[in-house]
Amino acid sequence: MPEFVTMLALMVSLLAMSIDSMLPALGEISDELRPTDPNDIQLVVTMMLFGFAAGQIVAGPLSDSYGRKPVIYGGYVLFIMGCILSIIANDFTLMLLGRFLQGLGAAAPRIVSVALVRDGYQGRAMARIMSIVMAIFILVPSIAPAIGQGVMLVTSWRAIFGLLLSMAIIAFVWFAIRQPETLSRERRRKFSVGAIAGGIKEAIGYRAMAGYTLATGVMFGAFVGYLSSSQQIFQDAYEAGQWFVVYFGCASLSIGAASAFNAKVVVRLGMKYMTWRALFGLTAASCLFIPFVLADNGLPSLWLFMTWLMVVFFFVGIVFGNFNALAMEPVGHMAGLGAAIVGSVSTFISLPIGWAVGGAYDGTVTPLVMGFAVSGAMCLAIMRWAETQAGVGSN
Image (cartoon, rainbow, N blue to C red):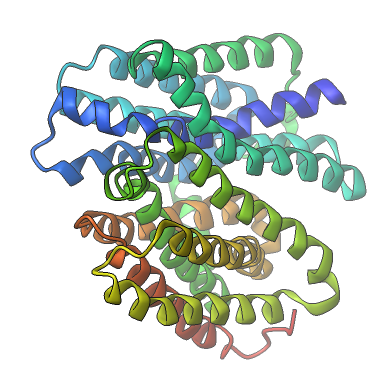
């Protein structure tokens, strides 16, 4: 059991590590590869998420048809290819191609690992395993930038991709040697594009499914805007230098604290109760912070910005977990495909929003704060629409 859980944690954490460890290096990558627009460096983050969104929708159904192991193997191969391209990249276009392949490849171990647990465990045993794995997954974003910063202190940004490459190879070999196939041939389903399309059509026919998936994408879009512009905000606007990793880690831990808090109280208070209040708190905090931002010409003191960020991220941590669960409620009979649809569609929705928020960076935090305020208000409206469907419970 300890080995299985550790291996799963490594598989699930590959995406977060690939994004967050790169954040301290974005400035140096921009200096060396020289994108057309300074804000285009944010594509190093968003292009990987684009690949991840595309990979999710096919990785789950493929693993139901051909087994868990072959699909995860394919994902690791794509990820390794992407790392190699990024290491040797001498222009920005090749870098973005490498990042797309990394995201496409990371989707398989991230999505199919949940199916691995479901195949072998159920009930409390499954909940225990996933709780441990997700706790590690939450911890990774808080330490990944520090790891990337540490690598850069010794060598160049290309070595970070070398570290990611090494992680993928270790995970690949470990998984191949130690993990047996969990989906027997008699339980496999024939792969059909028509079946996937039919499942998608059925899923979006549920207003709750469609609404909460849309809301997840909108809120994640604001978060992607933060991820994309965080290096510029902390290192350029606030001149935090190497302290960037500390500030970023504190904000990430705020999300982790919210997840732990939500897990303790959501059974008693309900998902919708928690989500409504978290969304209201997020929107109110952002709207109230806007006058302070404008009064300081878009750049309030760092301690004031961090206070707002940690408060908002605490609410974000509550919203993320509950939105996903609420979206999945109507599609329990097609949970695998449903999870792939929620993950893929919400990520696709988030990318243009994240690009709009991050791309509006102008040396201040004004676009980010307004992005969260608008996204929060939109999610409140979407949630009200989603709950107008007859028969939606009061979870």
